[in-house]
Length: 66
Image 1 (tube, one colour):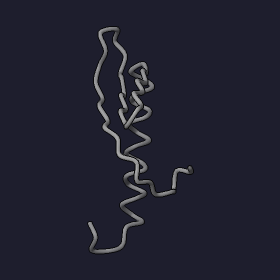
Image 2 (cartoon, one colour):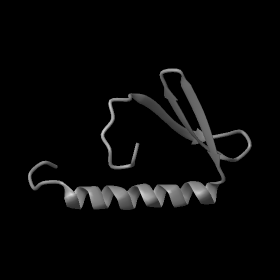
Image 3 (cartoon, helix red, strand yellow):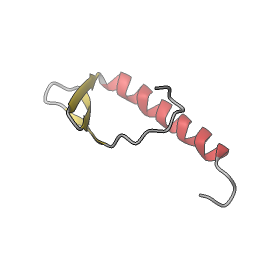
Image 4 (cartoon, one colour):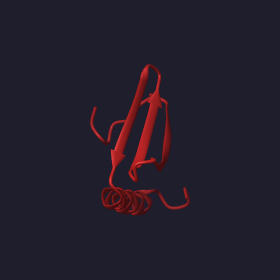
């Protein structure tokens, strides 16, 4: 499955700090629990990538659908 393919898979996403000073992204779907830990600098880079992707998606959206 590529990044630009639609999917019917539903998942829960949680993001928060760990007791060891890491940032955890926790993904839970049917039969899957995936904890992903990042140091704070990596987490900030991921946040920047998400913001940039959101801006590109917003620019691609049809006018009036926002």
